[in-house]
Image (cartoon, rainbow, N blue to C red; front, side, top):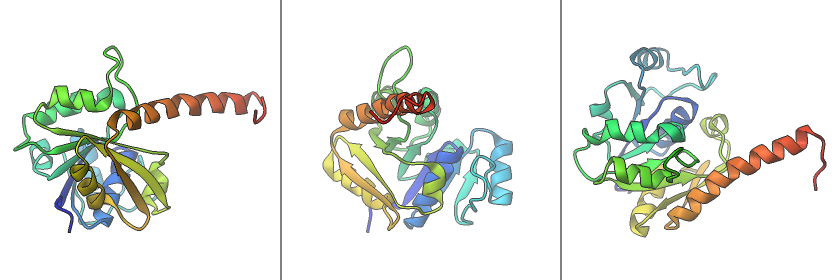
Length: 208
């Protein structure tokens, strides 16, 4: 049995909602936190997120605007855009009861500081255990149980393996790693390459 029985997802956009669904599918107790109280209340009552239309949110997922409630989870997934990770973790840090794993789920580098997401987490919540989840994944596919493989990296291999076990399911397969920086560079570079490929396709420059 995975040691992490409860999961909080910080950020109720499309990706956060998909990750909350993943965690619930893996048998965890799940809290999905939305910054906007009205957005949280709407999702909680309708079990539908307009940012991820057509995906029914499991009734056992608790949707809340209460950050202190979310912070009680055994592990936390930060599902905000990369440039909002610092702000989210800053708000979260004072509510953390102990050194919980905080997993960045955004690909990118912070503007201005040029820091990677795990470095941002380490600065904003010094007692946390930073980790990174990255891969070629789309929220709609993940939420609809289409096969997806990602990488989850943490500095300690035992921790990385436990986090993977807590989130894994037959359709969502995380692979653990201790190469935090490699995963972060790969994720950030992938976005740049995807934009470049899109431009090449749009200009009909061919496959070469």
